[in-house]
Structures are given as structure tokens and as C-alpha cells.
Image 1 (spheres, rainbow over the protein chains, first blue to last red):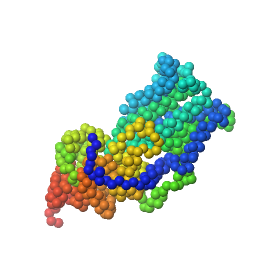
Image 2: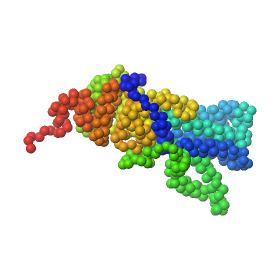
Image 3: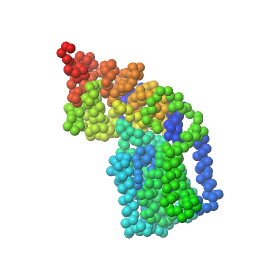
Image 4: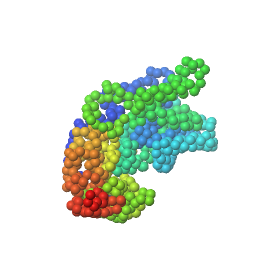
Length: 374
Length: 254
């Protein structure tokens, strides 16, 4: 179908590698995801910290919090692709997370599948379901899409509660075996921590590849202008669906790991509240950035744990509702101070945002901002 | 090259485009003109599949276009720009053009993820190609700018560069000279002529008559969705019907 136009051959090709690299890096900085210069050391330092942490921290509680952060990071990375790149919102991601967890539960306890295959199932089942519901749902836009995915999440949640014979109903399913990889049984928080964070880093590597590629550009094009995206040949409906399936696969994978970690699943974990939390993590972290989902998941989980410890000390006899009040208050302050999310925080510190590159935006006279960048 | 037969589109009860037929010869610049609301942009939206026609036939060479969706029509070799700019504002100038070259790439969703980190060889080639295109429109020194911060005239040029990046055989330009100053307009007309020399077919909607008269090989005049005249620039300028459509009924002496 691709026509060979004669004029193309006469197009002269200029190789300005400097300009090219600059163009690329500058765009990344604009979105606050620069990994250049000191940012690189920061990444290495963080990875080292993640590696060393369990060796020095001798507390199962802290490890379990870090594991949950890792699992949520995986979910929010996928949600970030859908929200930050493809520009679509989902208020039903706890359903995919839950479908992954229940897939592992059902496949291991009822069908006695080997653990690794069941984990594969936890990624595939939500992916297939996302492919089925995605077609009609993604025709909706903005608020309507939010309502559509919200409805889907509620339906799945009701399903977990009511399909007693398969899911055990509200009391859930227990007796899920530990994940076994070859001869390694992941039966301690220490071992599971390394597995989860290895998966997180792998997912982040894959997403870094995805976003810095033809498909990543196409996804961003879809969120900026669907007309223009179509006009350059991007199948926007198909691409949105792929982004949806991809994020469902990641949510399912995290759900499967979750089931192996706590060896028990019940519907309460996968309700509307969890979906909202995922969106919250994505927004607080800054959708469309690589570090954002991890930062968002870490902040929301840590804040929840911290307040649960702190509030009863300050206000004796205070119930969970006090936690929620402070939780909301602190998040509101974060969003006011850092409206594009924590993932863009480096751009507030010039020291960290790659001083080597030119900043043409600063030397622009008399230019009307056409509203591309806030 | 492009054949349009009996193209009709109703908005409510109003015929926005009413049995419009024309043929665009290969390698020519073909202009659509007419007063505001004559249906020019609607014709563009029908050709590119943004709107489905109510009746009529559109074909590019031997390929029938109506019934295809916009991305398929783009893949068939039709590129366009927009009257109200539709740049990818938060991407850089270079990324806009590289995204325009989407059809020239081949990396799908999975292959984009599972690969060696860094810029892929395919992307590198597309970036070099895109820089070449940017230097043709005089924007190569702005490659790293966020597209949304370019001056308006350069945003128009960037849209053209993005449209060209897919190597189309037919380019539709919707008011490319709108908002450009005289110098920029002169550069634009020069650029359009160069594209024509290289064998590209262009359809142009434009209100700036100097531009149209200078670059167009033939002109189709629309009024209230109907074709009122088709001819060369010289013929159009002399045609009383066209003058009436533009200037209103000639008054008795005043």
C-alpha cells in the first residue's frame, strides 16, 4: 500500500547527530523524565539501595510494605501507559489486578496447575478480558470512559463475591501455594522482595523501551490529537486497545504475584477503593513519566502505613476515618506543590535536570504559547 | 491521480457538499477556493475519511478510498494538514516529524518493548530522514524545541513537514498560508513549487488569492457546496460567476 513517491528520493538527508540527540533529550526533559547526567547516578544509587535494603533491614513488616509498593508499582506502570501516554482513564484496574490474583488462586488450588504456568495465566486472563471489553469501552471518551471502566470494575467485584463455587464468595480462597521457581521456593518476604523488585525493574526497562519508540510516539500522538494521529496513519482505536490490554496484563501479573505473596485472596482487596488508589498513585506520581508510578505507589502506600501508626498516637481512640482525612489533605498539598506529579520533581531542581543541553525555551522572544505545555 | 465523482454530504438538511466532481492530474497543484462555508474543508474531510460521504465516489489511482478509515487512507498515500493546527504540542519539532513518518516504520507494540535499550536503528534512520525534511522547511535549527512553542508560521510549516514525512503521493493542505506574513508566504509558495517539481500532487484550500494564482495549475470554485467553475487561474479571474460569488451581485451604478 505504501506508494513510492519520486520526490522522496531527492529529499536530502542531513546528519546532525548533535541536534538529533538534543532534540530527543530536550523533549524528554520537557516531560521531566530526563535520565541524563546526574539523573543516571541517581538511578544507579536507587537500584543499589533497593538491592541492599533487605540485607540491612531486619524487619518483615518493612519488607512487606516494600513488596506491596513493588506490586502496586507494576500495576501503576501499566496504568501510566494507558493514562499518561494513550490519554485514556480507567477506574476499573483493581478488576484486572483481582482477575490476576483469582487466576492464580483458581488455577493452583482447584486445577493444580504448576505455579509458573498459573502466574502466566494471571497475566493472560486479564489481557484477554481487556481485549474483549476494550473494543466497546474505548469508544467512550473521558468521563464516559471513566464510568464505563468503573462499571466494569464493579461487575467483576460482584462476580468475585457471588461466584461461590469458583471464588469462594466473600470469604475468599486460601491455601494458595508458594511460588516455586525451579528449586527455589519463595516462602519468605526476603526472597519475595527480590522477585517483585526484579519484576518491577524489568517492567520499567520494557516501558522505557516502549515509550522511546515508534509505538510510544504513536501513543502520545493519540493523546494529543486523534485527528492528527489518524492522519499520519496511526490506527488509534487499535493502539488504544493494545495499551489497555498491556496495562491489564501488567495489573494481572501484579495480582498473580500478590496471590502468591499473601497466599490468600478475597474480594475486599479488589473493590472500587483499590481502583481509585491506583489512579491516585498514577496521578500523584505523574502519568507519562517512568519514575512517577514507583514514586506514586511508594508515597501512597507509605503515607497510609505512616498515618495508621501516627494518628492513634496523636488522637487516642481515633478511627480509620481520621487517617483518610489526613491522607486526603497531604495528597492535596502534594498535588498543589507538584501538579505534574512526583515523577517530574527533578525538573524543579535545575541541578538534576541536565544542565548540558540548550534551553531554547528560555531565549524565546515574543512567542505566543499555543497551549502545548502548561 | 485523484478522482472525485458526485460527492455529496448533508449536515442536517443542508447540503454542505453537493454532487461535487473533479479530477486531480498527477504532479499538479489543484486549488479549491470559494467563500467561507462553501464546503472546501468538508471536501477534505470526506477525502481523508474523517467524515463519511452520503454518496459519491472517491478514488486514488485505482484504489477506492471511501469506506476506508482515516488511517487506512493515510496508508494509501494521502497526507494532510489541518486548518486549525493539530500539532503534537508537547513533543519536540523533530518528534512531530518522526511521528509523521509512522507508516515508514515497522516496530509494533511488542517489538518496541522487547529490544535493546536506547534509540533503535530504525528510529535513528527515521530521525535522520526527518532532520532532512526539517532542513527543507527551514526548521532544522529548531529540532529540539517543543512544537507548541514555535511561532505560528513555523507551526504551519512543521505540519507540512509532518505530513510529508510519510512520503505521500497526494498532499492536502488546508489553508497553509493563513496567518503567515508576506515573507513566510513567499517561502511557502516557493516550497510548494519545489514539491511539485519533485512529482508530488497537491490539493490546496486557500483564501490568499495571490498564493493560489501563483502556484495552482487549475482551480475549482465552490459556492454553497456546488461547483460553480473549474479552470486555470487566468480563466477563474475572468469568470463573472466567480466574481459574483466572491464580491456579490454587481450593482447598477452607484
